[in-house]
Image (cartoon, rainbow, N blue to C red):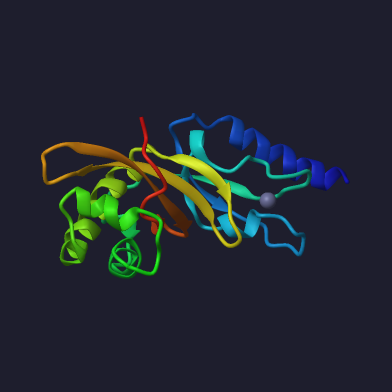
Length: 182
Ligand SMILES: [Zn+2]
């Protein structure tokens, strides 16, 4: 037990030396416990918006301080165009999203434009730590990023988007529209 306490104490003192705007890579100590630690392995977070650390008693995950991420160099946003073509603009879902985007002047033909808009804005914001940690899902940590979607009328709307955090600075779009932000 003494050795374990030493390890935990070292991990904790390392953690306490970090500042809230520091970026870290979460390095999990793989185990068979039914915890969320494995989902965070290799993922990059700003300290002020990351999973609770330590996750649980005897959590031996390690946080390694890293350089602030740089868009398209050490961080990437992955946004599948089908989130627009087969979801937002699909007739399959009667949830108002298609009407909303169409009211802003967009059609399915604008999917590539929207994909690019989402990627560039979210990547900038993720790299600034301008996101909200939303908790662990079934497989990944989830974050919310607010972006500005310009309607063709000239007005802009602040839209909440949902992203999964993947290892090595990658985020992946899960929800292109989860409501408006103030
Ligand atoms: Zn852990």
